[in-house]
Every structure is written in C-alpha cells, then in structure tokens.
Length: 329
Image (spheres, rainbow, N blue to C red):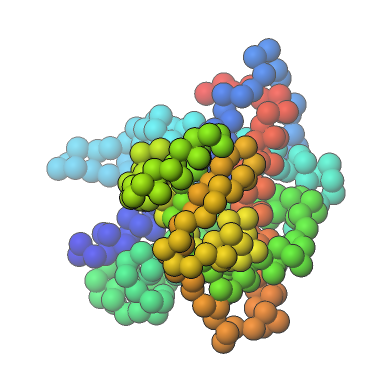
C-alpha cells in the first residue's frame, strides 16, 4: 500500500504544467497603471464550461459520520488554495491564444492527441524511473492488484494534460520559428556525450593577481581541492572541491586540460572576466562504438527540446511583461 501511495504522490508532482512557474515568476512584473482586459470570443464558453464542471459535482461531495460536506465548501477551498495558480495558468493560455491568432498559428486535433499521448508516456516512464523501475511495464506488474491500474493512471494523466496541450503546442510552434540548431552545436553535443573528455578540478578567481597567488600556494604544496573550497568564486565547483563535469577537448577548459598529464596543474587561463587554474585528474577515452551519423538526428531533437524548454519560459515571461493584465482575484 505504501508503494502505491508513493507512486501516486510522484504522479501528482509530475502532472504540473511547466508554464505555471513562469507565470508566477512574472506575476509581479505587470504594469502598475489600471489596465483593462479586452474581452475575447472565448469568455462566454469558458464561463459556461466552468459552471458545467461545477454543476457536474454532487451537491454533497462527501459525508463523514453522517455529517455532509457540501459542494460549495469544496469549491471555496479549491479556489482559496489553488485559485491564483489556476488563474495564472488561464492568463498564460489566453496570452498564447492571442499571439497564435495574430501570427495565424494553428494546431490540429490529431497533433493535440499525439502530443498528449507522448507527454503521458514520458511522465509514466519518469514515474517508473523514480520508483526504481526500468520501464513502465515493470511498474504495471508491481501495481497489479495493489491499487489503481496503469491504465487508470494513464487516463488520469491524459485528463490532466488535455486542458493544456493545445496551448503548449501553440507556444512550441511560435517559438520553433526562432530556433535554429547548427551542425556545430550537434557536433559539440556528440563530443560532450560520446567523445573523449578530461576530468579535472578548477579554481576560479576574479583577477590575475589572485590567480598568481593561488599558483604560488599550489607550488608550496597546498591541496588543490581545499584551496578551491576556500578561494574559488565558482559556487558549483567550489562546493565539490573544484570538480566539474568532464569536458571535451573542444570546450574552453577542455583544450588546456588535455595538454596536461594526470596530476599536473595548468598555467593561468583567462576566460571571460575570470581567471581559471585547472588540475587534470584523468582523460576519459571516447566511446568508439557510437557513430556520429547514427545519433545526429536524435541529438538535433534533443537540442531542440532543450532550446524549447528554455525558450518557453523566456517567451512567456516576455508576453506577461508586455501585456495589460488586470487580476481581480
């Protein structure tokens, strides 16, 4: 039973529309004047749909030891707890709808269905992974006779994604037009995932003078990792004793790292407005079993998805900033 509850809890966390985060972040960036919202041709339909959903609920949604819990109490609680988040989501969808109409961007019902199916499968796979299973089928076998079936979860996930699918697809189409993935980006991604890489530590400081001081301390026998923790200005690597993810040779720090032997320390490396010193730990050989031509299309899709994920947040934040929005909730 605990396993089923754990799985259901993960599913609930997974089924959150990503755009809501951007909405909330930008909620305070609206104009301070008294803006007005122009009515749209979907307002009446939206109101009617909302009322229809409420009317579908029984007037008494539960009874506890004979004491009824009325529908109105549930609605009031839902609005009080989730109302602002839901409102921001509705504002997001309206902003997307208006911009899509302006640019004459449309999506078909077939595209929406395919997108919902894809998102549901991705989330079920993520659910299986988080629960410690290799695939959705293994998760389904565990759940047999122990709670809701996988098909029930699939249906619930479809119902959760369906209201947002059209807006997500419209936004993706609006953003895709401004994204281009170059051959060099694909090659860099291949090298990062499958090429030879250098594993090294780094110390990052703000001036050459500081870097020279670091080199002197290292020459006198200071421990590189401890020194990184005490003086490096890069928080991510500093907290790991200077360790960074392995880098390919064509990366800014990969090239000087490849010129070292394990245990050697580099000279001062200017990079942007900072100064780096690296110590090579090891060289990781390339995965020769993977050929570039076999994975380049998958890498292109992967890079496009990454660009879209970042672009969605930026695009939606821009729409919020430029729109006239009056919140009455």
